[in-house]
Image 1 (cartoon, protein in one colour):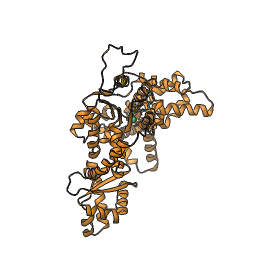
Image 2 (spheres, helix red, strand yellow):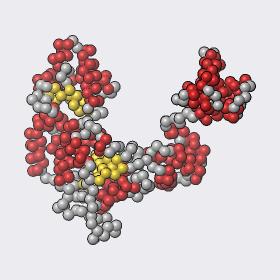
Image 3 (cartoon, protein in one colour):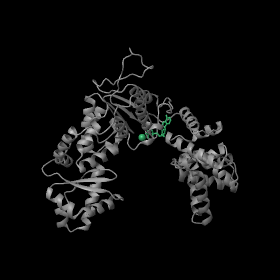
Length: 483
Ligand code: ADP
Ligand code: MG
């Protein structure tokens, strides 16, 4: 909520600078930002009359003020919360009559969707989902628990007590084996480690076995956007029906529900309806339920009701296996030394590994050259350059300075006093002080001297600063050390 409050404040300040206080106090002062995502902002105001005026006379003003605050255009809606606590509840109520009418119409209307169409709707906008299967998900220590849990759910989703649609994964679980269901299944782990891949794999697996199961996959943010759209267009009943009639509901990146009160309220009811009819719910998040904040307690506890499985960053072994698998799937041959180099260099996540292999495969194909270690080095330069720089070490400083001054590291650390060696030593001391957090005493210890010698070295270099040559030298060495 803090972000909303902060934005609310900036928004009001923006308007305050544009209008005299009587106008500001009358129309804008009571605007409360209650919900926001990257395309909509919903404000509430304490009177229906004010809402009407804001909508008719000031909608461009509100829109522009919001754009000035956040830096991009966004749709602004004002709802009135006259006599009610939650403004979003208020519009929900206002729309109820319409919804009821629609529900009645829908109940009397002939069925409009075939099962096939239902499935298409379930995975709307995700034409690539079929690429992601259990077959091409590489399993290692770090993801095997999440993988096993997803596989179990795909093999045996909870599809309701009376639907008769429960099935076991024939051949893997015998008829006498108990069928376990994990509901909800909550998968969490940092970005790029395969959570969405697993959700798609579940979708594909269930679809393969039973095409009439209604699967709904949604990113949490899209759920919110769709809900806001439904509120505005008065189609909440269709929205609810869509989610509450699903057999398997998969919500990706549920952490985005944090702080969105109206979405939490709506999702709570969706969750409860599905859970009570024993329908399968699968959620992913970049963090465990306890770290999603602010989140209503009743949702947090529900997220923890079933099975929670985490995915950890991949080990070296898993990274190498994934590199091999991705190369194979792209029909390219990567020599062993290049695989070792990529395994060592690409530690961030699996999305990064995939990007690198795609790039290398493209270079190889465009230049008609087989993939080599050298090609990989050049190709991934820009991919890994955005990484955190390696911390500056004393050894690194000594090495760079020794190369520049043409003296050995042993001499720099030793007792020799020839001019070149002494200058190199002063420079090392100065750079260690500048580029690390070491104390004067600790720096002295590197050179077998006390802190007063360290101070002298630093003074000597500083005395020459401001002179172009010295400044250029310091810059050049610093750049090399940090490279
Ligand atoms: P997340 O949803 O956790 O951010 P994704 O599922 O989008 O991550 O994964 C990022 C990319 O890495 C996807 O293209 C996915 O196919 C791939 N990937 C992740 N984990 C694996 C794995 N274990 N085996 C093969 N590919 C993987
Ligand atoms: Mg994802």
